[in-house]
Image (tube, rainbow, N blue to C red):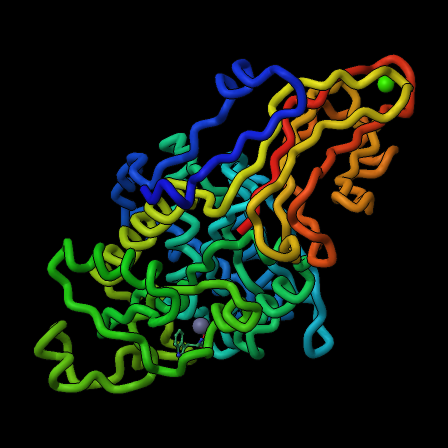
Length: 434
Ligand code: TRP
Ligand code: ZN
Ligand code: CA
């Protein structure tokens, strides 16, 4: 660990220095052990494909946007996630005059400011049931999500899965999701992993060449299996990761090939034949018969490996920390109180996204107005009175655009309780400068 990056300047108003140092929070270390990912049972993934095939067969032979087979596919996946303890959200949009749906599933817990997402498009084309494209990715991330629940995995980062609608109409669902995320929520996504076609019957093993850390995580897994990989080149930007990449989010993913022909060099490497990776791409024969079990198995395990590895530790904070951990009691329905930190040694202005970590113990946070006050007296409201309802406690890192403020000087956390009965205290207040 780089100690200079973890320099902790504890600055106190008053004499409680000893107690304050004792209360200092140890920084997370990059060396924290990561739990090993479980083996994903390919039989379970295949059962999901069989179920998606049945859904297509019962709905005119496809699971396309705007058709009944799409909504049935979504309801099928959602029911399994709900039963496993996920918090699911169905997001609705309109495309080509039909209602489309994304399914978002959050696994409760983990650092809400560091979110890892895995996603797959759940729609097929109208010409077939879409079992490799993209029942394969949809079923593999579903089984990974269920494995998280089965093993009681508690990731350090927050874990979220997405099943996108209308990918086949031009990445419509994933674009809608990303474009409707508030900028602050977008900034919390530390990585997006995309799985579109991972069981091609004449497979190649392609890894997206985008974020280097994500790419390495996948390559390490295949290296451990002794399976060679290549960089994905069959149309970068042709799947939902492009929606995230365009918003500046680090992305990665896996792919086993679509209509392109496997070269003889690739046949040497991976076996199979010098024909299309998926001869049934976008056609009616993309059924459960159009799957390589080996590719599906290897890629499902690779997904679990990446999900476990990338969520297992939080990224250690960098920068210079100024913190006050002295408790300040907040008088009931009374005057504002403050906790202060004295920032020194920082050149120029504060950053445009200044993390302000606030920890307040209180029995009814709706009573509280919480503000950050810059050295020149400018107040930034972090939480308005009357918001947050009857919940207990605030333990949140707010992001403040403080770029018009000089960094050095005394910064205050100002808290006022505006309603009778419930009370509490400021537990800690922390600013982190880059
Ligand atoms: N997204 C394409 C589809 O659904 C398939 C595809 C083509 C693809 N090239 C790709 C997927 C590259 C991932 C990466 O029809
Ligand atoms: Zn696809
Ligand atoms: Ca009160």
